[in-house]
Amino acid sequence: MEKFEDSILCCNSILKDYPDNGDVLFDKSCNFVMLLKIDDALDIFEHSISQGIQYKIKAKKSKSFEKLSNNIRFQKLVL
Image 1 (tube, rainbow, N blue to C red):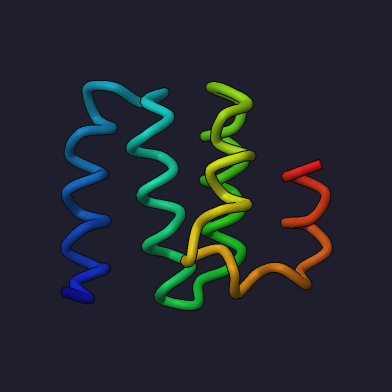
Image 2 (cartoon, rainbow, N blue to C red):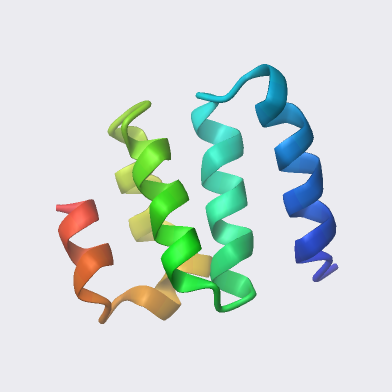
């Protein structure tokens, strides 16, 4: 539906009570990628993978993160 900013607000609401929820952090980072806010996306993605290695695998398969396949920082995070 491409309501990325609304989705970020929803994620923020959940993260107030559960700041280390990896799934919500991952979703929030995807939304930032779609808005082309790459530094924010990678900062949040890094926080999500600190919650579990499964988010590295998920990012490799994610359509959202395809845009970052050539980004050096992203490549280092998913190794």
